[in-house]
Length: 161
Image (tube, rainbow, N blue to C red):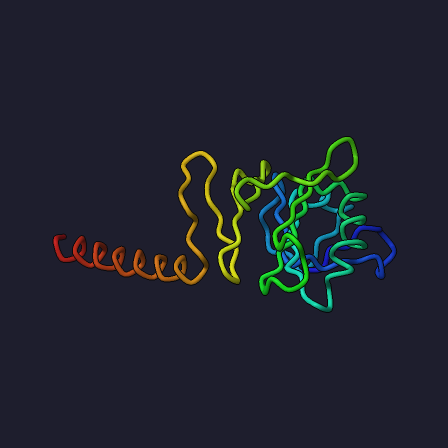
C-alpha cells in the first residue's frame, strides 16, 4: 500500500513492505494518507534486498523517523545484506535508537511481540505468553479447518431441529 505523507504532493510517497496502525477506522483503503488518517503508522517493517538495502537503511529510516513511526524493523530474509540480519529502531525523543537484541531476537513494545529470524522467515512470539503466532500458511489452514468444523456443527443443529 502506498503511504502518502504530504498533502498536495503526489510524489511524496513511500511503499512500506508492512505497516501497522492502531486506533484508526478499519475500512478498506487503496492508499494511506497521513493527513486523512491524522497520523503515520506506529510500526513499519522493510524486508531488505539488494535493490532496497540502501534506501531501507538510510532514506526510509530517516523518513519514518521524521514521520514519527514509533518502531522500524529491517529484516534480511536471505541473510545477505544486513548485519545483523534483523534490526530494529525505536523512536525516543524524536530520534531512532537501536533496539537491543535479546538472544538474536528483538522486542516490539508496540506490538507486544518478540521477533526472531528463523531461516528465511521471521517468527513472532507473544511477549506475555511466549506463544508463537501461526505463519500465514498455517493460519489459512487453521481458518479452513475451523470453517469446516462450523459447517458440521450448523448441519447437526439443522438435523436436530
